[in-house]
Image (cartoon, rainbow, N blue to C red; front, side):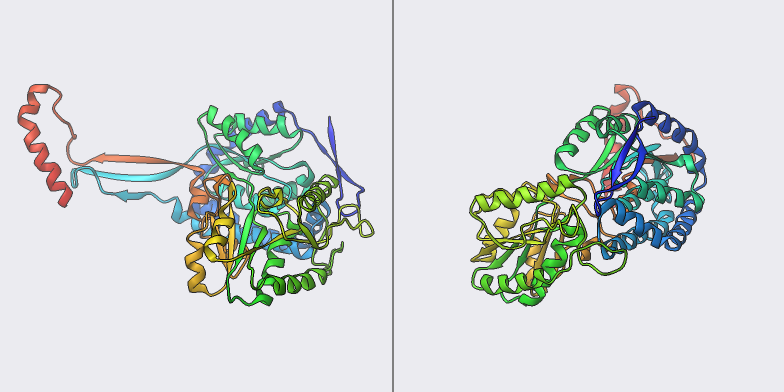
Length: 491
């Protein structure tokens, strides 16, 4: 058996080994899922929802152990591990409550009222392939796996190797809650081999990851004519409006940019501030950033934890170095913190950035804020939209005015007087990206219904519905049918 070594980002020491599955292993998992799925589907929505409610209780009972594993695998702080657990619980609770309503059969108007009755109903697609990343392994698992299961599907999930134990623990707790083992299976190993095998065997695919990989996944899924959803990268802006409280705006910027040390798809990376207030704002922001505590603890001691790996440290440092080479000014941070551990990086603010600079257009995925001034709101909106991404955005200021700005931002989610939590915490609302930030949505009713196919059932009442099948008959029937069509339009 081939294995993969996983390293603790907090210490740089070996954490454990995991099995490296092969494409053949993945195919066997899908076969087991196909055999288990019909019985699972036949349980019905209410029975499955009951198990999801039980899963909430099981996760809460194991919350401390889950946070311990999360921190060791991701390097995140205790507060961000706690946020992730609460996000996972919110997703499960929402879909457990909504499943019976979303999956019920609905009556629709028949083609010929009284003579035809029609129904629509969602039908499970079969076995869903789900590919999840390393940054939020618990929350993103529950946001995708749980609705797929509750829709009546089996799931084969490819976990990122770095955070496979978190996913495996989550799945084992789901089995404790009553979900059959073969209905939710987890694979890991070589990303290309295992990822391709999941795509090649799935009846529907949900992918979360980079835009570059998402394009490859979409091409492979399209070649099989299966449905898919993609939640991809972002370069998320926050606009501080004229007259906004600068202290509040700076606090929001910090909480929105440095959550999980900036390793979050909806993290704010670009901050637009009126030129007349930018110097004052910079000083307020600098003071707050430099007061943040960075470190490792299994208690609520630190504001930021580690980045996920040495490769991530090098990636973030490279962006900061290149930004300065292009003319940006370092306000604070901009360095690794080896005295704390191998993968810690200081929260960073850059200013005086040329508009064409790389750091304003490419996703950093780390604790870095790019501070940019503007002269008018129209300019701020134009700058905010000047990227290939459209995942998340934020506006700080008077709500009435901010709503007008929000409607002009090309982003799947816009938060007012918040960075991302206002929309992310609203499980009833769809979450996803415009432009190169993804396709389709997770969360909301559609977050479950994407894992189904619509089935239409038409019932002919009292007599068969038939039309003439000879051209000569239409000479007599066509005028009558035209009158009937006109009457039906008024019915």
